[in-house]
Length: 541
Image 1 (cartoon, helix red, strand yellow):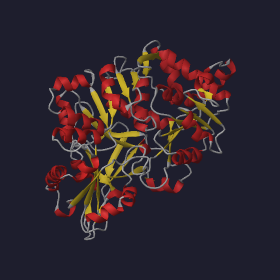
Image 2 (tube, rainbow, N blue to C red):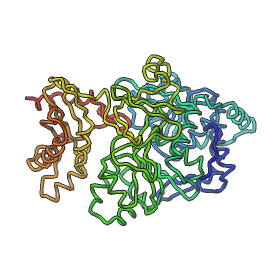
Image 3 (cartoon, rainbow, N blue to C red):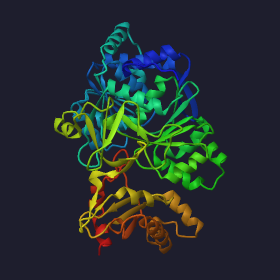
Image 4 (cartoon, rainbow, N blue to C red):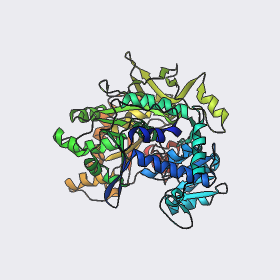
């Protein structure tokens, strides 16, 4: 496995262009056809964008907002921002206008690169934003293609000088946590932090080279997705970007035939629900037939799902990390997967468990702190140890199991502590349940709110001659009986105080727009409690 060992992200595109030349770097879909960029073309495009950014006033240390769905231009712009010595501030494309305003305003972004006119309008309305560039040309904004034209030797020299001045401790990006409570905090990540992430993820993606291709479909505002693609570029592998419609991801996997798939548990849960009775070779072909490694994180994945895909030749490597650790600190490495755990500490990282059960992490990837929030920084990093807020345990072999979030612990009216994650994960194994939230703080006993996976439950209902109406299905005796059977089986695994006594099924999913999910699709528990207070009260009537 070749590696550039680029000391900073600013140097990465030039070194990659020199080392890998005409090797395919990026593949993307446009108008139904796949197009490619070589490493040489990638390097040239990044230089043009960087020169254009310098032309419109971007200077080292400036904050540049990047507001777009996942697409190859996102990567070009991210690398170009680094080349100018500026600081990329990614914004989740699912963020509300208010959240966009907070991130761009708090970070001090004066220049914003937006995907289209709608996103550009949000940025342009902010008082501190002076320049807006759009990826998809739209008046009255400066188009990215226009920005790339006419680079002068002076501009290119200025970019080169800016890159040369970037040090490992220079700020590379400010990534805002999605925040299940309160306003998002800006995590300051340095070029040295990225370097540590490259080392850690390189151990997971061992063997990455020109024959490999990574399928990119997760939001690039997420530090894990972004770091995996940077590692791929460091090693000369290819990146294939999905076409923009999540419904087509599986179909595109069979077209692209990637070898590496970073994803989220929900993709594999939905695939498992459909494919568990199919022959292993059929499942492998549905994912392209070449997939040697799938990487997941952000939420637990059921061991039986991991075991099923492993039997199909698709090992799923569960991992652990967070924005504050610059991606991963632990992972199940190839040949050493232990289902139900998130693996062992990666190179350069240390993990220990505090007396109260909290997971603590230390290493070169630990972030430089929260932007303009020294109090929160001091509370989060103590004596070099990152206090993750997660609960967990280490086994005798050093494998980490995450058992829940400290702030999610339910204390019932009888004083019993209940960790919601276990039971929630059990209920989500039903193929047509998409979300499960265990509630019961200061209440006599825990209860559950469940939401449907609309497509899956309607298919299940049609097979049984049940009405194709989500509201009716949520109340239907046969549906509730199926959930009750699953709940009874799950409850048997836990002590009586941790068992859910009653449940309600909603006829709609939690969403980012409704405020019940974060941009990274984590549950905002307090928002759920507030929004569904009446439903919850009925469960205790």
